[in-house]
Every structure is written in C-alpha cells, then in structure tokens.
Image (tube, rainbow, N blue to C red; front, side, top):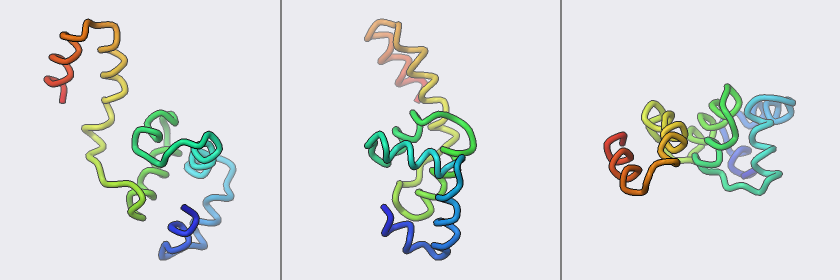
Length: 99
C-alpha cells in the first residue's frame, strides 16, 4: 500500500495527509490496525462522514479500489439492515427489486 501511495503524482501531499490525526488518514490507519482488506465493503463498515469518503476517492483515483457508482452503493448498508429481520424469501425478492 505504501508503495502505491508513494507512486502518486503528489506523494508528498499524501504523506502530509497521512500525518493528520483525523479524516481519511485516521480511517486508513484503523483499517490497517484492524487488518481489514482495502475494499469498498471495509470502507462502508468504517463509518460515515468525510474521512471514509475522501479515503475511498483517493484509493479509487490511485487504482487501489475499482470505481463504483456511489449513489447506487450508498443505500446498500441501510437496505441490508432493513431486510435482515425478514424471511429469506422476502429478503431475496426485495433485494432484487431494490438493486
């Protein structure tokens, strides 16, 4: 991961960003500390706010994460929470409809 960040066109600005105590850098440190993979799903579970959003945009820009349609992906965690208490048949039906 460090090699990828250092190959960025403005590597110095990324190193300065990583030194900040909050925001996307804190989110990245938390993912590394918890030994979580750098995936969209791991960032989704990292919470909301500007930190994970900026980290995701940076990782997509650097090619670490694939591009995804954020407006369509955003409601996914909420949808999963709403469907969990339902029967398997209803979850499948509503999940297909929601997607």
